[in-house]
Length: 107
Image (cartoon, rainbow, N blue to C red; front, side, top):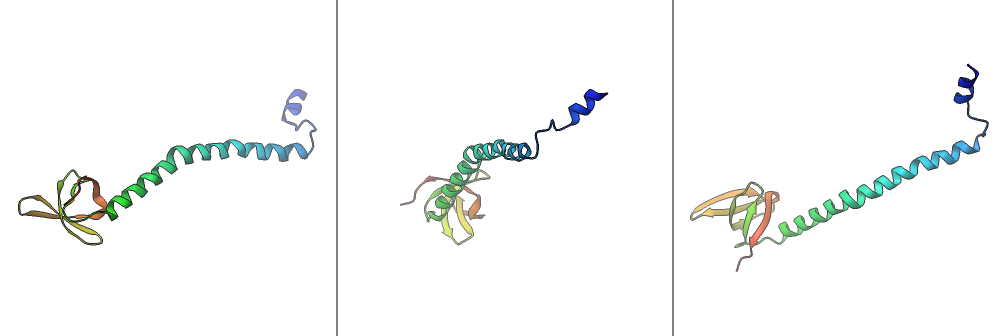
């Protein structure tokens, strides 16, 4: 039964050993955050920035594809809504944020 008491004891290292172990416990967390930042967060921010630039560069006559899969030509633009002609004389209004990409630029 004595061996159990020794196993649970601190081993007589004093208070100084506990402080160094506290900082050592944060090193893996810092490394994990750095890995997550460079592998997940930073590329996602770059992709979001490219999408914002794409949306701000839209103009009439651009051929676009929406995130829902609609292909068409832009006939009208406002701050939040884009009017897209998907067939001759068939126009739909879609949210500007739902544009996934530009297929071709207008004249």
